[in-house]
Each structure stands twice: as C-alpha cells, then as structure tokens.
Length: 142
Image (cartoon, rainbow, N blue to C red; front, side):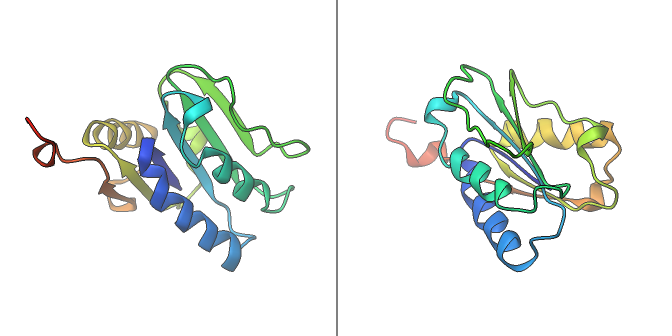
C-alpha cells in the first residue's frame, strides 16, 4: 500500500512506477489525499500508472479531495480509480491481507493515517513512514 497526501505523492509515484515495471501482477493499493483535484500534483500520473496494471487485477487507486473534485482523473474502461470528497478515511476495506504500508506526507497527515490504520487492524510493524513536508525554520520570518 502506498498512502500519501499533498506533495508526499512524489516518492510514491516513483515506487508505483517501479512496481508496475517489475511486478505488474502484484496487488498495489494507492491512497492519496489532496486539496483540489484540478491542481493536485502528479495525481493524473498515479491514475495512469494504476490503470496500466492488469484490468482484472486487484490494484486500485483511491483519491480524496478536501476541496473540489472537479478535474479528478478519469480512467475509461478501468475501474481502478475511486474519487471521494472530504478527508481520507482508511478502513479495513482498503487493507489487503499481509500488506506492507508506506506513508508519506506532512506530520499531521502521518499521525492521522497511522491512527486510521491502527483502527482498521494494521499492525505497527507493517507501517513504514517518511515525513515529507517543508520545514518552517527554512522559511524567512518563521
């Protein structure tokens, strides 16, 4: 499972492309949250990569947009992509048996996603995460 928010999508897309190229039959679940579909970085590339996997396979992309869903990716002929409004909600339905979960995003997102994964039944030993956000101390005036 690749779970990201905002610009955290960047390393996830690289991991997804690697899996698609080297293990296309492998089940991959991608969950991503962003603000607005129309200006979400790399989301169309995520959808295209998941759509390139076998159509009858279990791989899937779930997207959440807290603002507008207008402009969300559409994958004709492939049921791989689901788009929802609001904040990401991870449930047991999203968790394949025995999956390893990789999270990437802001501190707030990582805390929320990790707690949702726990409630959905994912053991902490299967959850790997990387903080991927700007550091305030780098910004002038902070």
